[in-house]
Image 1: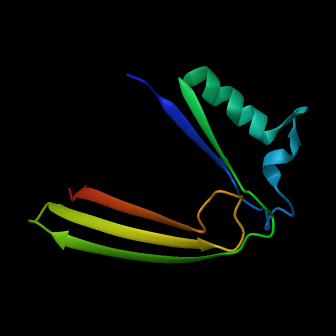
Image 2: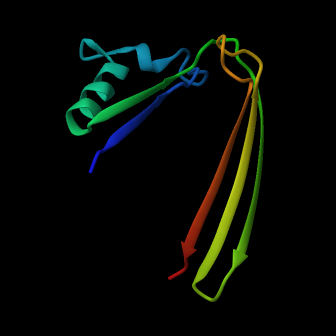
Length: 105
């Protein structure tokens, strides 16, 4: 089995006062600590960072849950996000479709 890690370091750090993934912690960037741990534990690593600090986005989320019986439900969701700034060659609109089987104890 192959194991991959997805590190999401795309936050603008508004509450922190700047992008914290680049701040030093123990002589290394916070991002480097996470990358080191992921590389040691996984076969591959995907790093997600923000393309531009001026990017703004509009996001819509929709979901539907259908109860199948007293213990099971099927949930589907659709998320659409439109970005104001993207790197050349990338689409401005992303879509994420999810399906979950939920068990209620």
